[in-house]
Length: 449
Image (cartoon, rainbow, N blue to C red; front, top):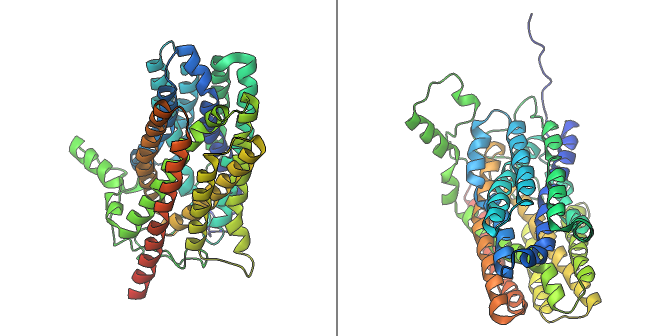
């Protein structure tokens, strides 16, 4: 009996794509909520282990950093494994297990291994594959789809701050960690909803992609005929150990690292990652050291989350009006806003003012990340998107790891985070010319085509 032919998939028309958007929303909500929760638990864990603030704070940053700079290996797994659903399921199990095991740790080393290594790798496996699935469903509506999906990041900031503080007051940090592990297991449900389109989107056998108007004035990049393996391209082949290693390295798509536009965009976003990672971990601690109560400080992530949420949707909303701006203009505006806000936040002590400035930092972060999501989507073909996102995140993760260490050490040396915030403002200024160079390089390359 002949098998029934599946319907042809057309981007932006398949309703299941919005189900994938919802699954991505929940998965992102959990993974980034866990990062914020670790920031809330920082002082409680530091007191329990009688350790320095910077050591526990760096462990929290390592959770995020390891999940980022393990990205290229996840990109390789994404290409070589036939089911993204399976990859996300494994990541959800690892992430959940890391928090549960960490709740029973008796030393800082045990806690670091369970949170930074096990949960960090789990976060990576359960995060990056969603980008490829989303891109296979959306093209013209991608900016809206990714804005909705990634808006869960600021919402998680809003929810996880007070929620974690309430759980901490009720169950202590160990009980809170166990509950976080249970919440993380819900990523398995998100994985179950992942389904690839019946017919794949354009692959890297095509030379160029058609780009919508809102993607930084036409951000497309030649694939140069790269022969990158996928799970289907190796079915039925018996590979030696050497062949498997070569296949793994090829699937990591190192050629992306030689592209000028990728280099400029990634360098600029590494500056943003540096500032964000240090700020998101020490945000609550900075509020406490500036004279706020623990409950007042726990509301700062809420203000940041509201601003972040608004920033994510500013560009997609304005794109549908006559006030539409190029993506590069948006990203530079977001960087300038974060520069001014970080500099002001360093000297603010009043609770209402700190809430407002923290919200403005969130707006800037939302604008920058949303603009970057659109720029990255149209740098290359859909089947190379996960690799591109993973490489950018990997380099950003190294930057983020340095941020957590340096910010913690600055606190140990100075007794506050004021110097760190001044440093963040300066680094945000550095990112602006990098984004501008990226935009000019894009125009120059397109004029040559």
